[in-house]
Image 1 (tube, rainbow, N blue to C red):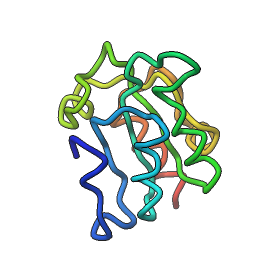
Image 2: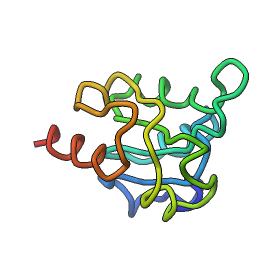
Image 3: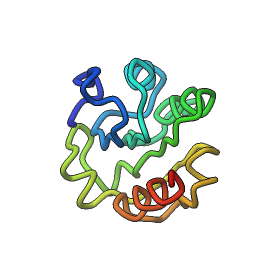
Length: 117
């Protein structure tokens, strides 16, 4: 989905590829539903890692979360994130699933799904 704010209960259990930045406000939307995983845009990361700060928040509740480099995919464009995104940041839950910086989004999703069982 282009914006994580579009998430609702019908997305429960899904792995969501979002065009949104990975900040705390985006993570709060993701916390509203039980997700299998979520991808954001790092939005250039920014001051105090603001563009990826939400990954840690999701880690606290056991959700694999990652961000793609803003130079690899357009912010706000989930299709471009899926097709062109390159992982630039991961939380510990995603890392435990085998997700690594430099992976494509599709490879990262496969890692999380395979770790899920």
